[in-house]
Amino acid sequence: MRMVWGVYFRRGNIFVPTVARAEAGYYLNIEPVAVVDVADFGGVLSAIQAAIERGNPAIPTPTRANFPKPVVPRYAGVKSWPQFARQSLYWSIEKAANEYRIVPGRPTPDGGWVDDEAHAKTLPPGTTAEGAAERMARIIQSAGKAATEHKA
Image 1: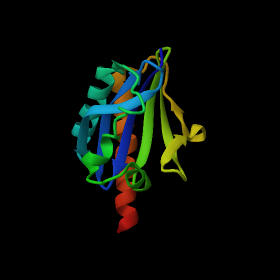
Image 2: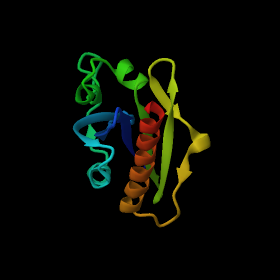
Image 3: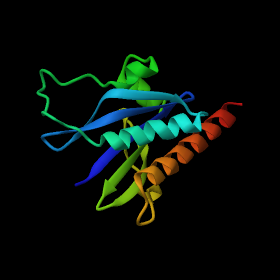
């Protein structure tokens, strides 16, 4: 079974929501959401590891009438998903058949991301959840450093 986790970077912080799998088969960000300063490597690593350990909890498929608002923008202090998306970077960590991949998101005009397969990284066979979390934490820290240097 395929597992997916998302990691967002915005203005010096990372946001790591729990990613649930709706009965209909799609994934949805839910509580809890960890927010960590990107400079705190141990905190970033712990947040990503905790999300992976939670897995993808199964939830009932929401109806249109009760579809939840996105949870991550509230933690970033913004009012809408499009505003959050315009100001953020995104990566997913995927696990299928005991193989982890880290896939960056490429922004779309409608305020989201699509998988940037050209820059996806398949981790070596036998990589553990901890190893995948560490690799993702290093990628996030590198992006945070680059963003800080770009502003300077």
